[in-house]
Length: 287
View 1 (cartoon, rainbow, N blue to C red):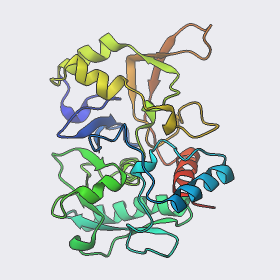
View 2 (cartoon, rainbow, N blue to C red):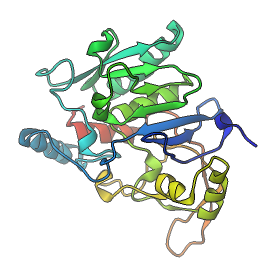
View 3 (cartoon, rainbow, N blue to C red):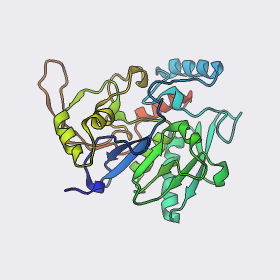
View 4 (cartoon, rainbow, N blue to C red):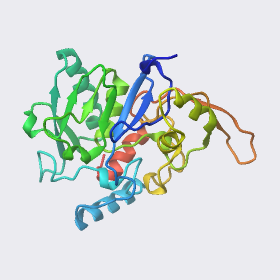
């Protein structure tokens, strides 16, 4: 039997409130990713103000995007919630709860890829005290790789981490910080062209104590259409938020008349152009 670290996935599982997903790092090993969402996440989408709503709608026209990427507006950080309100950008304070100097530097370098690619509209401040932090990163090697989704991190007790990194590898760090600013798993895009071999996946997950219902909820369900960018009817297979689908778990076809053929995916490697476009659209950022 494969151990937890080497379990091939493309899946989500409950862990308190998290969605557990295993993803493949760029170096070919495996890792567990948990995206923690609030219980009402799938049904509640809010705007903090009418002005902000108008800004998002204007941004949607500018970038030819909807107010949603692989993200819900309710998960985006508000401009008054960061540590630099009134500046036109959102600054999230990040506090390290442990980790070596090398591990911390890797996190800083890869988290800043998000701010560089999005034009600095979302920035991370790694020089804050714990009591003033928005994100808190732990490095527990036994706790997998996970992050709370977006602004739900603000509801976490200040004494608790909002993210854990068992594997300090570029695509894992970028993936988890994608969750931290609100992005969801790309394999759950509503326009997914592949179909799960449900019996195969359900049987594989029994080894981990998952019921068929848990597997269906956390692996097979897709988000509603309001999670997809305009002009993005299909998933972004290059997205850093896409994680591996092992051989035998799914099939795909290009058109409705084509035969179904086996579908596998190695998992996202780095932040893609569409990842950036969606964040720009939902946060109202300009190049």
